[in-house]
Every structure is written in structure tokens, then in C-alpha cells.
Image (cartoon, rainbow, N blue to C red):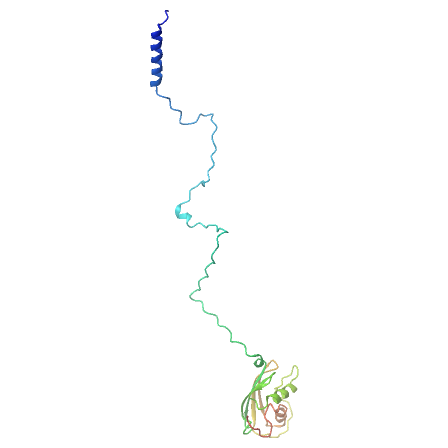
Length: 207
């Protein structure tokens, strides 16, 4: 084989270079080779999507740095009514021993309605100090100061006059509802024992 002349070698070289430039490049495979190591990616998004309509109903965590407003007061039901408060307490000198005395038939200056307060003394009684003192003297523990005459008592038939008295109220922690008269010796003694809380036999001027 005879060697090619230099001009022919140069032409052949130029032709080969032109052919390589005209040949289209081979595109790289779209997928990685089977032996390639997969790359792990870290995603901060949740694994599932939450619909936009649902996210508005989800509770949010309060930021401790932000001030929180007080929760609104619960609405009062329409059927609820305002509680009725008890009346204010009476003054200290009007919560203990209080008696109402109603006297009939005892005469001018003694008949009428009287109020008596004790500990301390007060009211429109003709002599509240003496009335409270005689009531205290006739008060015994466990006994009724205004107890009626026992039904089996033997009493003298003495008529002490038409005077009657009715006493109501509270005394020594007990309710009082008692009647007095002067129709016999026992009733007269019971009446006189509580004078001057009950009017005496002599006439008294009203204040």
C-alpha cells in the first residue's frame, strides 16, 4: 500500500472533524442508573394535604409572648331570674328580746299597744328599764317565763277585774304568744309577778 500524500491526509482529517461536529449529541438517560444511590430529601411539609376549609377550624396555639384577652362572660339564659336577696339584718339592739304588749280593760293610761326591747332597753313601753328587769328576774333556764297557769291548779275565786293582756314576740331565744287575765287568784298572781311589764293595779299616765 503506498502512503497517502500529505494533502490527502489533511483533507481526510478535516472531513473527520466535520463529521464529528455534525453528529448530534446523545442525550443523557432521564433516569439514574440502576446502581446509583438514591438521594434522601427532607421535606418540612406534612405527608398529607389539609383542605383550606378545614384549616380555619383547627385550634391555634397561643403565643406566650403575646397578651391574651379575657374570655367573654357566658350569656345569661333568657329564663334565668335575678336571685332575691334576703332583707338587711336588724340593728344589734333589735335582734334579741322584743315583745309586743296589748292591754285591754286596765283603765286609762294603761290600755293600748306597747313595744318593748331589752338588752339594751328601748321601745315605747312606759318604763322599759323596769320592765326588762322584772322579766330578767322571772326568767329561768329551761322554763317558759310566760307559761300559763297549770290546768290542775287550785285557785281562789277572786275577781281581779276585766283587764286582759296579750304578749307576742321573742324572749330568751323563744317565741312568745301568751294571754293574761285577772279572773281568779292564780291569774292575778301570774299577772302581778310581771308588773311593771304588765300594768299594775294603780292608774299610770301615758308618756
